[in-house]
Amino acid sequence: MGDPFTVFPELETERIRLQQLTIGDLDVMYSIKSNPMVTNQYGRDPHTAILQTEKWIEVIAENYRDRSTLYWKIVNKIDGRVAGAITLWNMDLESHMAEVGYELHPDFWRKGIMFETMGCLLQWAFEDFGLNRVEACPLENNIASIRLLERAGFKLEGTLRERAYFGGKFLDQYYYALLKNDWVQVRRQ
Image: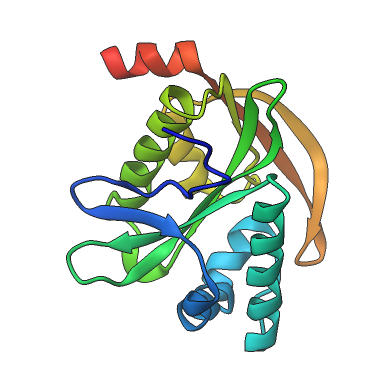
């Protein structure tokens, strides 16, 4: 596969297609970003105006041009709806590592969509993009994300005590990582 910052990689599984997020996805991403059930999970206030989401998409596009972020929308192949998004960001390509982030509209929760998406992204990241390490940093109250990461083979490396302030209180943030060798072992099981 070529340079993902020249030709954006489209990935797919049986149920989902991962495609580049564009300004054409403004309305659906606003429906996700304005939903407190989604944004509270990662310690952010929901968007209250579509202009916030538009500016956020512009930043995503700028970060792609700067070769620092890859951001996919998750398209449900059955009905064509955008279910959410997944990203590789905070990249250190010299060290062959990046952080993964994700969000999913509540209509698609508890259906295995994000686990399938994560597996697809990790396969591409390790096999085609050349990463050796993928990190994730969920907040302590994001139980679904923690379960997803552990099910995907990520290992807890530490707790960043009271690292985030959200909802009037300090929250711990967990530091998870998956190494390519660990991922290969998980896939063999």
